[in-house]
Amino acid sequence: MPAGSHRFQVGALWCTVLSDGYVANPASWYFPNAGGAELAEALAGRGPDSETVLSPYTCLLVETGSEVVLADAGMGNGSSTSGAILARLEVAGIRPRDVTTVVLTHAHPDHIGGAVDWRNPRAPLPMFPNARYVMAEAEWDFWTSAWVDLRGLRVSDDVKRAMPLTARRCLDALRHQVELIGRETEIVPGMRAIPAPGHTPGHLALLLSSEGRRLLNLGDAAVHPLHLEHPEWENGFDLDPHRAVATRRSLLERAAAEHMHVMAFHFPFPSVGCVAARSLASGGWDWTPGW
Ligand SMILES: [Zn+2]
Image: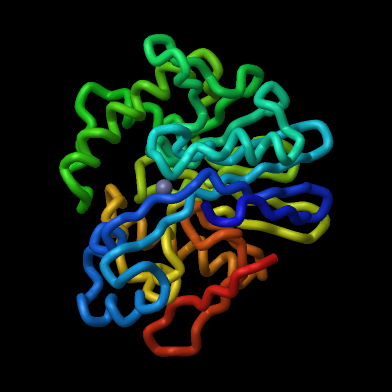
């Protein structure tokens, strides 16, 4: 397990990044259009080897004084290297019933699995019994449609088969507490959800703003710092890679121009940092971790 929690303030908003765990993925899934030699060189020293990416799951807890918001819930107990979110919340002083809002950037299993209590697998329940679960209507419609077309993904067939099954079981368990949004929406004072499609049809970014400080949570608009240095490098989990790259560029341009801090769910813990435009002709952004 990586180090588990890190607390900081965005103005009057108390924020804590909480690690749910991590997954080891083939590098080719995260960088399907990167050149082999260039990718191996770029990954050298960043993971166990140049063919594997250790990808953390980092959720964001936001306490406003009246609201307790959890942005993404992690994978939960769906793998042997995840499921720490409840313990991390408890150490942060938060019980499941205290959470008032869960925001799901999208319905991939590593973001939604922890939102559901699987102790009775035949009758899964919302993990946070008093929370409303906010997500994009386009995301709900995509995963609950009769035919979920994942042919555009460049990951294994096993992963493509498992994703819709998990999404449907989770969304079904959450159906009585879900709140669907169709456009940019203020979720609680100081926190807005911004449509950021491409990774999935209803993927959301989150913008926190208080007392002149801002944090832009990219969700999965970038899943590795190399996606900042090489914004043209696609992610095999992006359903619409061209749209995903355009979304990534526009979010990062905004973050750099407006001097926002940035968070990304899969970046090395604590998954927060700053971006700065590179002066190179190739473009891209440098990532400086930390708050
Ligand atoms: Zn993810």
